[in-house]
Length: 147
Image 1 (tube, rainbow, N blue to C red):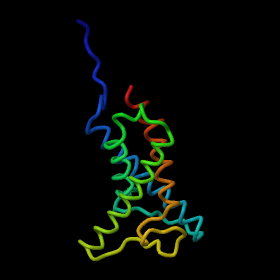
Image 2: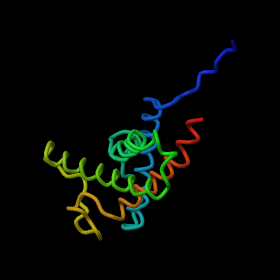
Image 3: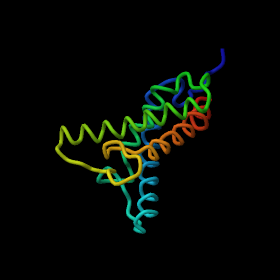
Image 4: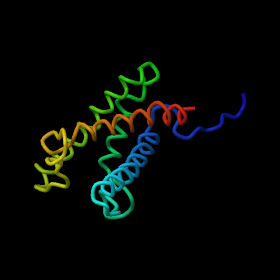
């Protein structure tokens, strides 16, 4: 009977969900800041919160990747994981935009002028980025953290 070493975030747990939420929040700020710089030539952080480099829309999306797809991801091929992440990410961005408009009567973003937009709430190219983020998270980061 040896002493069992405690592993942080063992199995399917809140610690991993929270870790993916935080990673997603920061990745979202970096992504949107780079995107804004490429489009407008201005380096301005695109954080969704007042304090810190956090965009909770992306945190929620990354958490949903883990919650909905992480448990059985090793059995799913990369392409299917990519498609699911595109859809989950796009739906997250769309739903948060919709809820903000209905509940708060505000609009944090409007992509109506962008190519392949979906009612100005998200775009197909942004959904493709969500898919890439999901692949990196579920196929590279998650297996490493699960060990």
